[in-house]
Image (tube, rainbow, N blue to C red):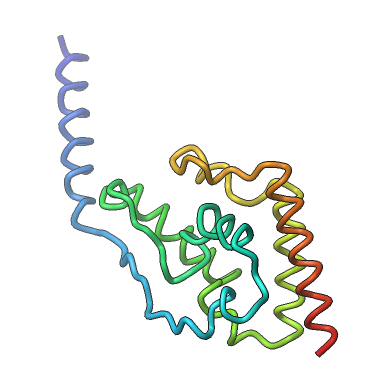
Length: 156
């Protein structure tokens, strides 16, 4: 009987805590985008590469994040907002034109390295985003494109 009472209060406490944290939500921002500064405008990108970036990278690595309904629920919202902030910090496809030539070359190499290693897209992202998982062909296409872009940068 006593255990049942304790469990009841514990469940009530957890429920109240869950409701309470709904009032503490992180900012889900999408800063303005100057299309001329995006990786899409600044590089010689094929439609295939653009499609891969759009379905597998854009949400965490650009200022055009699509915030699904579940990003309204704390603490999930905290986790996802942090991922987007970190992703944009590491590589922002919307800010590509603001990177200097050396940083662009380094980021191009990192893109290939990350997808080859299977580190990107994150394994926590792909289950909720059908089609975002990269195939072996997607990785091959991205790496060929990054290599060509690095060569183009070096030729300038």
